[in-house]
Image 1 (cartoon, helix red, strand yellow):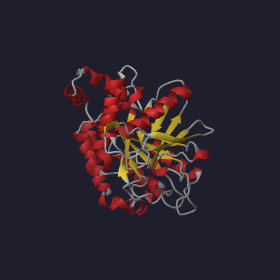
Image 2 (image 1 turned 120 degrees about the horizontal axis):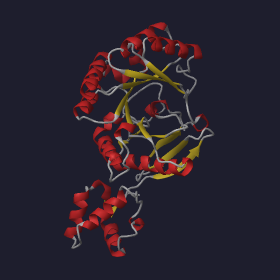
Image 3 (image 1 turned 180 degrees about the vertical axis):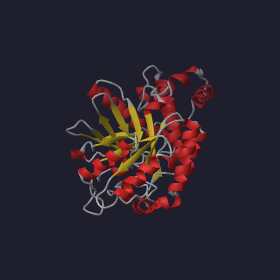
Image 4 (image 1 turned 180 degrees about the horizontal axis):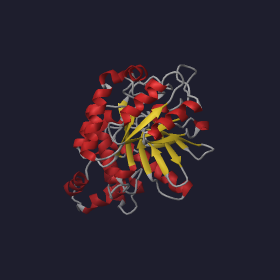
Length: 346
């Protein structure tokens, strides 16, 4: 529902304290409200049970809480949970809970639609409608944390920014959201358990390094051959592999944090020896690991899952060169719940 009132979660704690002082109340009331907004994840002012009715009415008269709403939640036979998240302006994004034996991971969105044009991605077929606000990103994580506790009996353990959108094209809001997620006044999740995945926006990778971020970096690489990468991810013509390499070397020099390469092998596109050799060479520039990702076809077009033999050829070459490699099998196939750039159509 559209409203002219300001979203109270756009205010800092100090601004909320100042609001109460300006309205003849005590500053500590702002601390109480701030705690309800973030740590206790209040959806409405009426949820704030230790705040007087008069105070809640005053807040209601001046502000809104533009909280997300989980419109539909689908649970896969493998335990994966996909949320269709409705925003205050009726736009919808997706987030996914991915469980394993030891942990649960939240895959969250950073934009409605996407700024980029990766040929293999369902999200890229949607135009970018807007960036998500910090609270909208935070709410996705809080919702999945609640689902993790409900279905798996423990809090959320990891977060990946691999949902809809390119996180580095919404950098200020993503950073603000991560600040809240990691704060003791928010969800208190360690930044070391957060991974931000980019399609390779070189200058923003350098900015992250300069900002001394503590979270991890993943890069959707998919080919270390310029011509192939440009064909499947046309926007990368503006971010050539030489620039990406330089940015990643800068990242590692500043942060000493390994890079994860997300890499899908497609039949007839990057399943040959030349592509394998190029990836091995690229991996030697900075300390890294490789996630080979099983692809969920979004149609009957050019992007089809590679053979098991092609995957094994990649594994053998990487391991022979002492590069850590893991195969990420697609989760939630029965509900189309793959994350981000690899998401199926709903």
